[in-house]
Length: 265
Image (cartoon, rainbow, N blue to C red; front, side):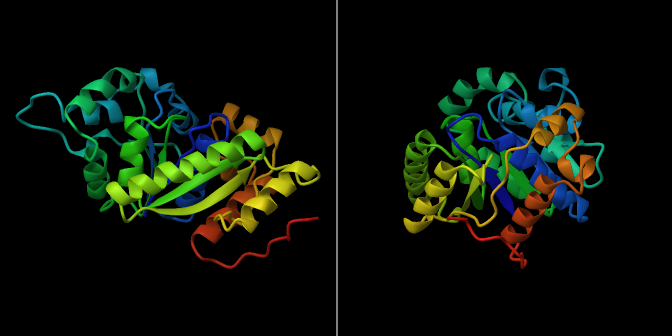
């Protein structure tokens, strides 16, 4: 399964969600790949412990092969890096993505990522794609390459307006480029259960019939500690409440039964 985590709004937790779901998948014995398409490289740094600028054989190098003349192109799996966690691998980002984007657009390479990830799907049980906070060439490529889309939602009114725009953009892309893509769900992230506004916004989205997932991820300093230590929560704090929420989210996405508390009034 190929999942993309996407939102045009920054600071909504795309990298955290991508990496922590992937880490849970890997901890269950599934060969799991994280594809980092954000030039900032947060997922790359989180899982590999190195800034993207220090790495060779990145997703930019893989994509550059499609616009540079070469008699022998390397296979996609040659650009995959093993993390220090069992079964968890990364196709890392690079700042070079910014410079390469125009070349890829000019050569109409929007479908190449899908081609590469389909080949990698033979080697991996699950693939998670992290994206930049923009609807650019790379996020469109990711949405074309993916089978499922997760949308992190920061519980405020600005995020709500942005959400409608995102769903419209995804609908157009589904019709024109990827009928296989399904919006798997909206994830209420950094949720504060004691505050009335987040509860109200989530309830209203559900009443509108939008696919809000039943697991809400709490706001916690533990996530920042996880970033600093370069350890996903399942490894750093396996018994923490936020870790359990991520595990519940993973179970919901995979059709497993989960006991969840109802949204309080």
